[in-house]
Image (cartoon, rainbow, N blue to C red):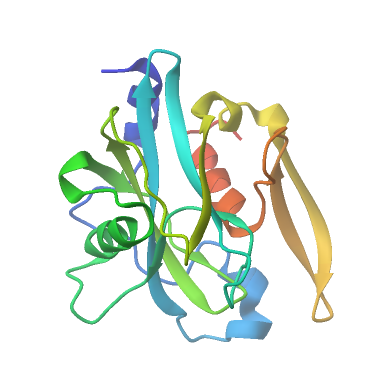
Length: 201
């Protein structure tokens, strides 16, 4: 097994026990969410092994979308009643957004749930994807698909956090120092949770 991937797996929650809400960051959003759980959603955190190491796959959302337009994200979305759990949601959304077939995905485990200011409770599913996968983005949802080396996110010196005011309350904003598209907000928070679970921050 790839040594970088081997460092990630022990930090993940078992696929047999999906994490339950609230999100690990819920206390910062109490004024927005109260005690209620957000709308269930799931994303895939896709890891692809290539000769240079492990790459993390991201999408950049279509600029015309109603929520989080133009932002960098992981493929995913809200859970449908017919989904058999967060893994099924993440796989369905990946097929719709970037034409990633389920047979090209090996789920590895979960990170902690994350609450968002838009009212979702997101379950991140970390998975290894086929090294030969070539994304075909759905232009109605995805403007771009790109990859960043996992090593970028395992370097504590690249993690930035600051306080910003939103609706009269100071909140923590996470971002990674990277020269490509801006990786911040909920997407960065998911990666911060992974780094913390790995004991690197």
